[in-house]
Image (cartoon, rainbow, N blue to C red; front, side, top):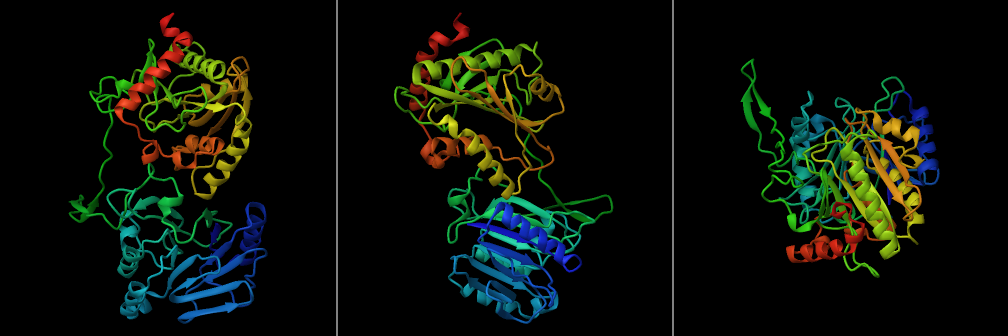
Length: 486
């Protein structure tokens, strides 16, 4: 179900509610809209075509209902909605929270309900410490979070401004652990223009990792951190942040200098790049294609981005690889070909994913792309707006990819072996969160393979013997199209 969460505030409430109503009509209808924060007694919060939950810390403990579709939650408790969504809430002042500590912890620990959404007006100490907030959180919220492990934790702590965190898991691995997503929403202000509204999809009663494919994009769980202490120049002990492991050519999965490179999957090697099979392929053998067909084209040198100027040898060689694979897919297996790439300054080793799509399914691509743009926006990832171009030689397209400071996602469609390539490209802000599985998510919908979005999921795993056999079958089919043999 689709959920929207907003903090309309007290200063510009009517304007905020109008915007919420417009968002509901344009992007909804949403099953439930959560309105967080302080509320005005003389204001109607009854939104059309949705269930409204008003979460406030202005009233006494307990819950009441105002009008038919507005539920008011205040104090602390757990409520199961008609939709099956279970909402936990704690909306008390700092003093009341401390006074009610025993009752709150006993109440939540005694509950056998799986809490889908936990709403608190005060944040936790763990998150405050992890994000280096000046305002401290409250350890009672930490204890409730550790017990409940909700799918979503929503706060409206005014001292924190807007913030979200990458999904984080509660165990050593995401496959056997509940996953949580966190948002803090400040009140609406037309002056600061800070983000105050978010939307997401949720399935009541299910672990976050059963219905979301975030397993390769997990952040640090602030509740499991054991902070290392160091002294700053003033002599005060501070939390030390762990530095990211640097990946070079000796540890990169795509570099030949890595002794653990998966060389059994390589199909062909050219002067500057090579063609290899994808680990944990999205596609499966079908029809005349006796192998999965999901391949990667990768530069031999350890580069994050490639120069796409027309005279660049690496770029031309990679495009030659993808056009030859497209010819093979169409002539031998009656498949169109989709190529997906990310050009990012934050990338480790550039590569293109090359995926066969039965030609009767390729017409679904634009619908799948539009759908994924909407889902991507709901999940709070970086904003994507795709432009469409015909042909890799299109002048406007060449201008976009010719700018070295541009970061972008691109899909290239080869519908037949002779048709011009169709390109869908969107630039993105490098400072915002990017969904690295965007390409697989989009094509999993086209191919109706929702369980194969994650390359490392059990259903996608192959033994080395299977990988070697697939590489041999691919090589045999590609032989008459392989320019490295010419």
